[in-house]
Length: 574
Image (cartoon, rainbow, N blue to C red; front, side, top):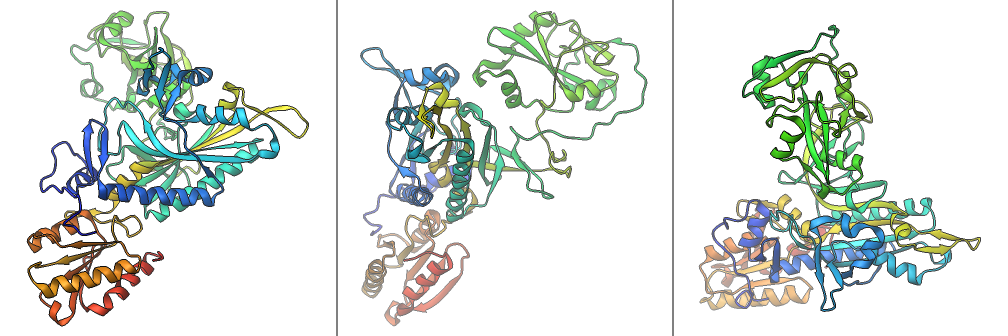
């Protein structure tokens, strides 16, 4: 491709809307453009990268024995209603009606649709196991789209679904997909961790997430260097040493605390650590109000709370000021477990039951109560773990200290069991001629998010540094001065030679200053640059590697060998 013909609208300035490197560079490099918030168009260079990632995914899925098909993005409400997810999925689902008032959605995921196809077509255990997949656009009405392709309302996803006759078969399918995903992300040159995840709206009993490690990742990963434990902060168990002093249990005492409503204010007022307080958090769950009690120096894990309650996430929200006043009789900041309205159910993190002589809100404005103890002064439903894990907590597997890092979720795998085959009554005949429910797994890869994750791991101040395997083009030949016939002729010759070898080449034949051309080549991240300049008459060119910045002057006849060497280094075939 000659760059004089290429649609590549690069930007010199960083767009104000872009907060993270991948978003900034995709816009600046002319690879994407925003249509509306959370919805992007892929321009030629961006589309080429997307297709290369898509092809890696396709090759590894096919290698694992999965079969590709393509389902509709428009899904009828009836299937979702059969599984109960029409109401459970919440406001992230794009819903619409046709001219006959029939309800549909734009598919956020496809468990129901795939299961429906299989229940109508597959009848015998002899047809199992089966793994089918698609690469398709998904739609989710994110409350706050941000970070470009990281959290968007329209995104490209590979989703696969396995159907087995029993748990053992499903676990084998799960392992095959695990290994396929490792190959996908290794080929994409991502540095990643595999961590335990929360199954969320997908359901099932077991799930893992593939995290591309990055400082801008939205997910926190807790991991242990002493063993192989790793989990998202939504899933990770909070295990830590509790300092149980030998102090005697003291009588309760009401304390005037005017305008002291936050943990920080209370620590200063009582001159003690946050571990002496019990936080009382009030939540609305549909028409009910609940109280959640946790140690004052810790944070609530809302995912664990949602899982405990067994209700959709969007139905659980922090109580507003009016509700708090109604159930406590006090202003915000003075809620406590003693004296709440009788219909407020109390959930207690197990660590709270071990605290002695704690301080709580008095359910009266400007009042706190100290020397409060579980059992004597209040009770509730004790829950083993409701806390968000934090740096320094103990590994639940081996007891060593946990470390924390950020990651971008690029893939996930779920053991669904019979959740969807039960809901949709999807059965097959076993060896004895009896009806059995399919045992399922589902497996997702964010193709467009993987593109952004690669940039987050491979960039510098000058632009993107694409790994050769996903680069939009392999080589850019830069003509320093297009008015010089010897430079143009040599560049054309090299362009044709490399193209004939199967190398994807850009020829920068634009009537631009050399500096502009060099800057663009670095911005769009082409792995190799051949500069044809003043030594062209002597058959000499400059060969530059984007990743290391290494430069060398070589003879024109050696260009193809240098390119071949980089393909060998990347373990790619030409």
